[in-house]
Image (cartoon, rainbow, N blue to C red; front, side, top):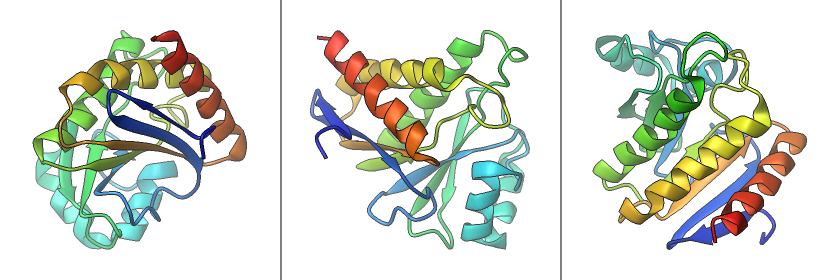
Length: 183
């Protein structure tokens, strides 16, 4: 497990290959949402299918959201109490993409903190249909979360749940580089 996780400022950050809808030990998982917070492809579709139709009804009054924004709902059929929905930037369209992507992670983890949650699971935001290159996206994610770590008191574990082994290995490598480079 040591190559899969790092601890910084009392916060454990880990990277695993898996299914974000099957993380029963996390208080919340993050949905890589669309602006209308409805089912779609990729992570949003998987989360909506697993959570059930109640999720769409709960999301309706919260939409639309803007890139970088985060909102929270119950987990419904998921094994998690909450779902935090973040709209990542479309790479090359929503600018500045790097700042908007950082806002996703910052706003997502701060919403978990505000709710008093101790653990949260993120997908690789914006890297699927939204086209953000995986390695730069991972660097932004980890740099942002490390910068937020000092202001987190309830959130103690952040897990990245990646679809493929290749993506998990890339995130593990980038996490080690960012944490070790951060001193």
